[in-house]
View 1 (cartoon, rainbow over the protein chains, first blue to last red):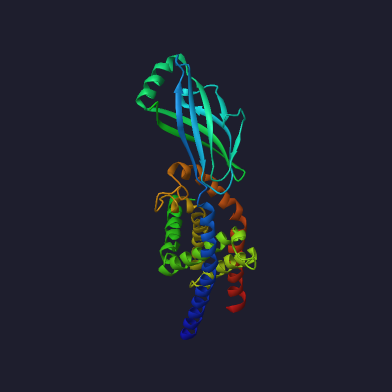
View 2: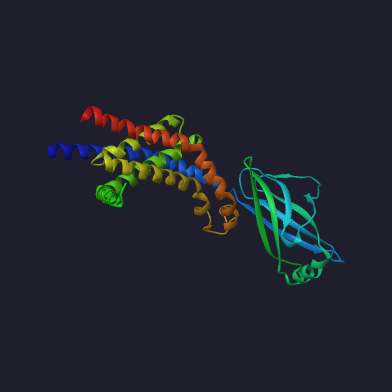
Length: 160
Length: 163
């Protein structure tokens, strides 16, 4: 009886090993493919330029977006959060459109115009001069039709 | 019910609690094994476009169900197999989610300066919740149904036919 049970257990273990093997093979192939699709769905915003109006009332940022992926990325809405909040005008690649689709391997440039409140103007001017200004941008980004809202913090924005 | 009776019943329940007996190396190994296989099967199940045409999602569901069945076959008794199945089903789902989101962390450190192979913490943070949600919602129902169907089928066969 006991040898029979041991034999049955060995058969079960062998069958399970076989199942694990035939599962692992397609899994490895699928995982490699999955990794491939993610190789470059990266998103990389940076502040390309910053300008403050002479009277300090308007801060203009040019924010660049790289699409390192092989799928188009659509950026549909942008606003600036934090102490530099308020109404702003955004243009994409120089056009007054609300959203832009960035094709794979290309980049887009958003021009963000931020009104600066009178009480913040001196702070902004000094921070820009020191390249220590921190700006939080909120972006709605659509990757494969899935919209993700994300706050991105730009640190060290300056006039240098 | 008097305090004495309650104390007696609690003591009796404590005596009958067999958790240490269930937490055996065999049970843990079985849970890890079936969880690993079921997790791999689930990952393949939702990635049908990346596998050969002959490997349809039915094969992947069969693998998940078989993994559930082995939770009973590889353990000694019903108590142990239930623990292995419950732990295994949770581990399997964790394996699936882990495999699905892992590219964000596997591709975070490029081997050489390049524009194409990185996900910095900002991007990881941005995509993580989205990917976990997508991986969960696309597989959760089929996964649990297949795993538990396989497990319960084998338990029934063992209980009513083989024994």
